[in-house]
Length: 82
Image 1 (tube, helix red, strand yellow):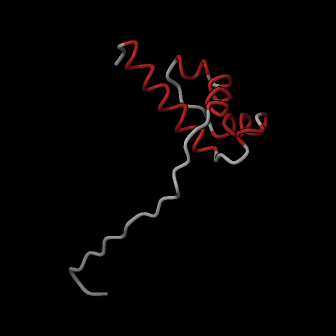
Image 2: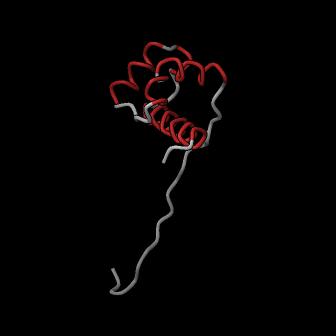
């Protein structure tokens, strides 16, 4: 390795998959209260949601968590909280 040389590595991202209306409805059904109180679900809560909804079988628990987080942020903006 050369001294003073900084190597920048790019992150690889997977292909982004859009959420279907059925997937959105399933997540909103399970995490309605989380969204309303602006609370991100834990890993085990996300995994329970995925296990109980067959339409979410191909989603990662992190994808569900990020969806709930984004929905909570949107809700926060709509109601004007900070």
